[in-house]
Each structure stands twice: as structure tokens, then as C-alpha cells.
Figure 1 (cartoon, one colour):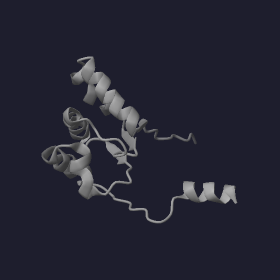
Figure 2: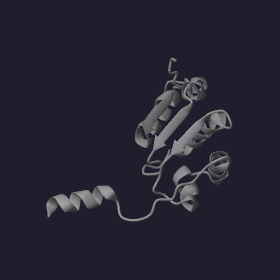
Figure 3: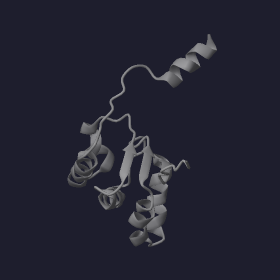
Length: 127
């Protein structure tokens, strides 16, 4: 009996690289390609969103990506920023709320608390 595996196309991107992709696409006037590029993947993972603020004009680009994937493909978004800070990070309360609505509908939130394992490992190595 042959074993068949269901492979999922995934795309992992760090938030600063994601922001740079948004900026480059906007600068090169290729905005229509942006949602299509990210829609090719069944799973999009944006890591550490919120460390760098998104430029005010780029919030709508983030929304377009989230909206284009809504109820079609999955996403993992990691952050250490509380959800109540979303308007500060995204610079547009209306779009921030729309993004959060589309992200949280059909979602599982995993809230991890406690000390950072990276910091703990670093401190243990110093001892």
C-alpha cells in the first residue's frame, strides 16, 4: 500500500521582511500582485508582528492580504504585543479593527505566559 502525504504549501516570513515586501511592492507600483503572491500558500506565518510599526500608508496593504486569505487559507501570526495596542501599531483604528476581525474569526488564540526561554537559556549559559 502506497503512503500518500498531504503536503501544505507554507510561507514563513519575519515581520520586518514582510514590511519590507509591502514597501517594495508599493514603491514598484505592483500593488495588484501583493495579495496574489501571498494567496499562493495554504499557510502564511508572519512572525513577531508589532515589533516595528507599519508605515501609516501600508496598513491597507496588510488588510488586503488578510482579506484575500479570509476563509480560504490559514495564517499564523505571532506577536508579543497585546491586542489592545493594535491601533498604535497599525496607525489606523478602523483598519486595525477590520484586520483583527478577519484574523480572529475562525481562530485559535494561544496566549503564552512566563519567562522567555531564550533569555532563560542565555542566563543559564552565563552562569
